[in-house]
Image (tube, rainbow, N blue to C red; front, side, top):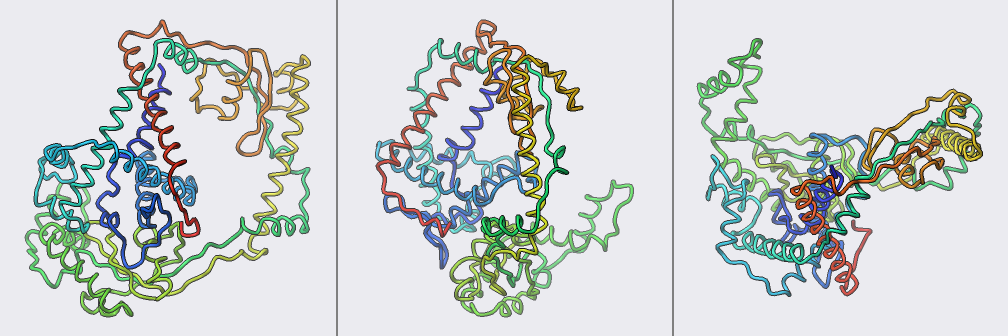
Length: 524
């Protein structure tokens, strides 16, 4: 019951409030929070405090990581607009700056003991289930953070947490508000509908070359090949140290037995030796690998005009990437640090080696520009077929909507949905008792069903350009009296949190209205 309320609370906390109080890095390039590399374009200033592009890159990567977790590891192709994610990340960072500055002005205090307790409880610093001071120091050094820097970040976030909890505790929700919310949120509706597919009218549509050319000329910005680069790069990982460390072949064979000894059809030792060797070096020579990465970065900085000194020093191959644009690409284009460095002034304008890029704990890269392509319109002949098909679908959809408008008037004049379904040779769907968050039927249909009065009919446009006719058959309101005492208490607390979140949003709007905010969107 009321799962939508619970999900709504969880979603808001996850995407906004926790966004304010979460640490601004996940130990990948965290040092950027204190200042960027040789070039870090400032995208915004909030009351004089700068927001560099690197922080937006990190925020976007955190968003993508959250989305990957939501979708079980992989994001659906084209499901999320990279530019929209960057705009959202910028807005969130601006809100974060304003909120933290406001909290500081409130004079909240956090003790050293509270900071230490919080850090010791963070699992990223644990080994064997317990806090490891060595791991703590290694991770901070790897991210170019001092303990004082990190402790200050934790202290700041704990203050924001104090403020958040104070807002929630002081927020008010009444039993009558809860009753109204339950009646509304736990309401279900029954309806019938049929779909009028746009493709039904495709054969009636004609699109000539003049139509295609006119659409292209009017919408050239929709058919742009984005600015992109191809890179040269070297990559240093555990195997780069194979000639510099002692390798215990017997230890590798023991690893082989542990990993594949129970398999019915194990690979040969020789086939997986490289994989086993990489794991061995990664575990046994972690410090040496980190030092090699630092040396790679130093050489890249001291000899910025070529990757050859790095390749010679570590026996690395100079490789070439595919085309990479600001939203990413294949291969190393999937690494946010690579994108940030590829479009930095040092790499893009001056042709220098990039700063050291830490792709993960034991993978280091340095890139340099090989080729640069400005954003430009794709040739008409390249996109003509795409435009022609888009226009056919668009015009077929318009015909479907026109037909839907005609038919809904017949419904209102007394015709039945069953008659129209038979006339159109379309399937009629009967839906019993669905809630607002139902996803088993078209979202536009469900949304419209909750906007109608019982017995009313309407038409809606569907996501694919088709249309749907629907008739609302019944309404069942939520029943507050059906809640147990425990459910009522839980939902009252959640309603109180919702009120607190509303107060936080109102506060941020007020802070924005008073703040001096400058945004250079061309650098986003």
